[in-house]
Amino acid sequence: MTWAQHYDPLGNAVLSTLLAALPVVILLGFIALLKIRIHYAALTGLAAAILIALAAYRMPPTAVTASTLLGAAYGLFPIGWIILNLIFLYQLTVKKGLFEILRNSLATLAPDARVQVILIAFSFGAFFEGAAGFGTPVAVTAAILIQLGFRPLSACGLSLIANTAPVAFGALGTPIITLSAVTGMDLHKLSEMAGRQLPFFSVIVPFWVVTAFAGFRGMLGVWPAALVAGVAFAVPQFLVSNFHGPWLVDIVASLSSLAAVAVLLRFWKPREIRKASDNGGSAPNDDPPPRHQRGELVRAWLPWLLLTVFVFVWGLPQVKTALNGISAPAFQAPELHEVVLRSPPVVPAPTPEHPARPEEAVFKLNWLSATGTAILLSAIVSGLLMGFSPRAMLRAYWETLVRVRFSLLTIAAMLALGHVTRYSGTDATMGLALAKTGALYPFFGTLLGWLGVALTGSDTASNVLFGSLQKITAEQTGISPILMGAANSTGGVMGKMVDAQSIVVASTATNWYGHEGNILRYVFFHSIALAALVGVLVYLQAYVPPFTHMVVK
Image 1 (cartoon, rainbow, N blue to C red):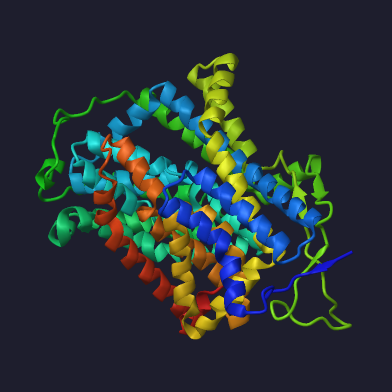
Image 2 (cartoon, rainbow, N blue to C red):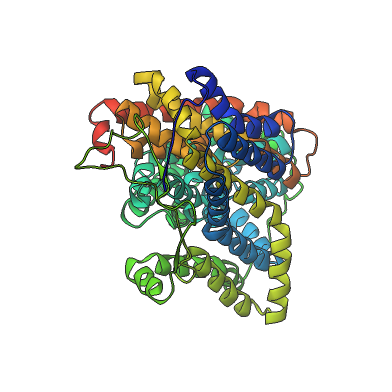
């Protein structure tokens, strides 16, 4: 038995669109206006989506239940599985004091404050974005910068501005992986398309963040470092995203950027060394940081190098195929698999040659080949090499699980909401309305991604909310769905610096409570300007040669 979606349940396109948007409005309103904790907001938005699917769209209750559970399952695995094990590895390094060694080595490498902004906020922050994401890079880099003498406002604001271009591939590609899961679009094509948009901004952001700190003239004094850091990040970002996949993009690119700047600093120094105190900061750590032995530096970097190796090997097609052959059960969602039918005009009218095909609803538990499993194995090996006993690692793992429990709940609720809107057809209702923006849709569709991240605090969550909407609208307007799906994520990254969660993370990491409004004002213009530039690029890729040749077919 099948159920056909319908997209105007109230008999009025405007009212139906408003009703379809209600779960998103509730979710974003609770976060942005009422300042309710995000897991409560996510659960409330999910409840609204369920009620609308049942009462207005007349979706069968069994199908609603199944889509909710399927979405929550995808939230916990593979996405939650990645986050849990990444934070576990990070916690192990903190417990052994290896993180402090990394900080000291970075401070020794770059004594100029402007170069420190590039090296720490951009290059090193991108590494933590790629490895962990979800607020970790902002917390880490802001804490390091303030210890190097930066003002709290600068430490927070610069960390937020720098944490943009890497975000779409953060947490080992979680936003792109989620976008593929929600929309059904090919993962590698989405990765390729995002990798043909973000490298432009990977070159721009180092110049931009130094200008925000030291002004245009101050930036000119370190332009070689900004150029080297940006290009050394952008080139691997393009290559890895286009020829490997989304998992290791940020890790490879950030390590390349760090290495390139380190090599540059052996042959080049700024003509004038500028301290953080020159821009109003204090200099509590004027004494040079302690120098560590080579063995200590190797121990500090080893866990992250092991992580890179494990994830890279797990991402190889031959390895993934072999592991899936051992264990990769797939479960068809009862009462949902091949039950829901998309209807015209969202899909072409069925014909005898091309009959309507019900939507698939399959959960793949490929636990052995999952990226999160590779991370867990790298964490276990690293923990043993760091001297942890199995019991100590189990204790640390439990502490990590307790720490991220609300994050896991939020992700499960977000994915459940996305699946309910997808299978009920409410996303199609909104997409049909948004398609009326016509030729300007590539620009405004990109800003939709910005809005989603600005209000939810997560590129992943924005892709869940608006991924299917972007796909449907693109199909209605004759634009590549791959282009607009990627644009939702790449436009969204510029909203990362103004979302409430990231700002609170930054103020907490720098012990600058109660000044979140100051931080927001510091970064708001930068966020709007960069998002508009992404929108312009996507518009050019949609319509204007030679940019149109960049679109993945």
